[in-house]
Image (cartoon, rainbow, N blue to C red; front, side, top):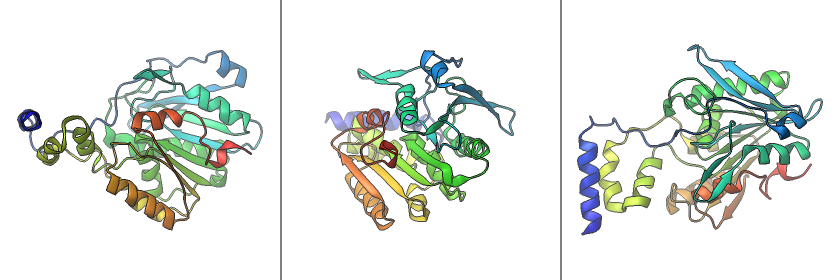
Length: 284
């Protein structure tokens, strides 16, 4: 009875909007409005990065060098991740500097930006803009390695896996691609509702959700010729068990390394703030 009542409430609220007006909560506020270089970043010789988009808005991020001709990791952060200040949720701390430092010790440079409307970047939050933001980030990464894509690793977490997938759909050919806690654009919202309010609410609400971006994770995995590495959570509610099997099986057909951990989505993303044991980035 409670599940039915919750379902009805969700449907009534959604009905107040035109059909398809609801965008899943994929890009959330995070970070601070200014980008500071703390002691660790200064010690690494890090510098702020500013990329101007065709719209006139600016993406802002951080470049952490690691010596001449070092390979570069281009990071695509999760929905509320930011390069400005550490984030926290449910007692967990998400500090991108921990990841920068761990990779730098292994000889990898890092480049990461805030999406539009997040942290130090201009604009309004809108998941439909993520593919364009990702392309601008990729072009900046290419510039920093003199156009040599074989020196770039793409590494996405949660929402960032869709940013990564959008680049694969555009033909980007990195040295390798790492997907941590992948999500699917077409089902993330329904899965989110199902986890919080139950299957009935998800079923009733699904027709009211607009697809946040035209990115097909499965198609991107199928097209990827670069070595693939995926980290999945056995308790990750943003993929159904059937979707998780589908992603793992498809990745396996591409020769991917797949690591499944007994974690939910948030804790899997948290684990991704350090190089995971299966990644080629874990040791050089």
